[in-house]
Length: 348
Image (cartoon, rainbow, N blue to C red; front, side, top):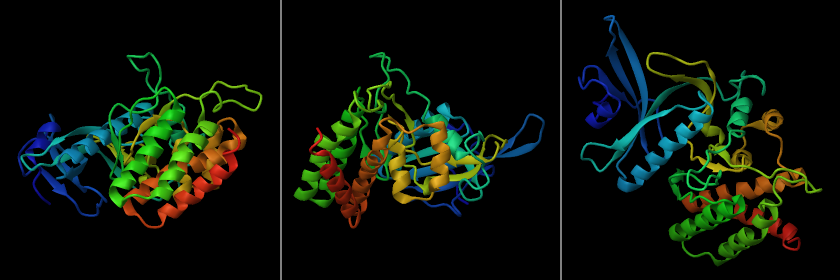
């Protein structure tokens, strides 16, 4: 146990008495930040005491930490607003006391058994298929300036430690090409040096495959031209099996119903199938889950191009992991791009 920085206590409106609040980091870990549980003993009006728990992330990485925690704060609340109980709400974020560091405070997740076990099918309102389906059918808010639902996010977010600028676009194809594929290659170049072969493939994919599969007048329409296009919805953005589990959100003295939950998001307003790229890449969800999910969110037309779209979305995560870790993720990205370019280069 350790003392709680005053900035966190103030942000959460907790008493500053060190005897009533402490940080516990046992059993917690994170790849890019320090994590801990804040335990606070609160005196009730009746004279009884209750323990409140919060999840705290901290980092001394200066401005980068500020952007990362602000992005996660907005991501968590975008998901929680769309599907209450699906993820913990973010409660506060801000600077620590004179340490060039920042913190993020959220509701506490009491995690239990493996994700999805015993949670039922897509008709169960606490199942992953139901909750993710509801998230992916909740339209993005209307932009106040344009009166349109747009692709992007109000602030930058981080996928791992990769900064995503999330500039708003009216076109999903433009957003995905520019804000995901081309920007992640720029990040990779900055970290790992020039790679002309990779650059050429990324640019060709962005300029040939993306317009072919994701164009505004194509995506969301069947082979007869029937359909309504697509609309931006909230996506988690980094939904691999390590960011989903089964548990309950512990609030101020209360515990919610146990169900499938997600955390550590990197949200944006996107095509719903963008979420499926990383889910397929790392596995852990299974064919049965996708069958249930697609009963809630049918595959986008043209259905015959569904698998190619998922590969195209998976590509971003191969490129991102190559940018962060280097190594074998490059070959996975190259393989996807080569296959898609062979298939679609002559079909423009």
